[in-house]
Length: 215
Image (cartoon, rainbow, N blue to C red; front, side):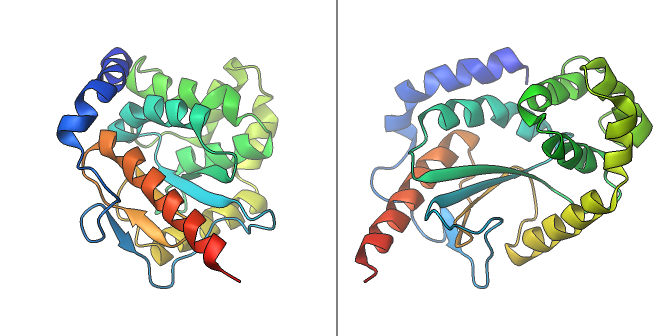
């Protein structure tokens, strides 16, 4: 599916939501599951509700989902913190390492969509088995320091983040991408990509209501 088609589907969503998405709160066992022993990715000293997207740059569904992510982020409530998290099932996954290196360099806004495009639209990077050196060259072409990015992708700091991301995925029963986790308590199971934000919004409302009831 091309980026244009993904955007067309997004634009059509308001017209089709009433017919395709059931009214009312999300349904446990169908729209989402409760995570026993689930984990947040970040602590919440500010009390914000966390929404994590576990994604993979090589995943075509994640590439299709990204325009929907961008649209939702523009309207997300102020009490919600959104987090990207690469699927780190393989500790040597160069694309996951590339994300963490970009995050350390505060370059995620600059490279996130372009990296999806380089893989799925332009064919500038392989859909699997990319090397750290290839990604370093790509980063250099995007205006980042190639040597520093390569060193970062191979660093102990990124090793630690990869291990932690894998532990998060295991604890939260993530088996595919894209997957959305709300507050380390709920995993979204809606099959249609277009339905997932409806479920997320409902779960956010549930968490907000539960927090108000806590003495």
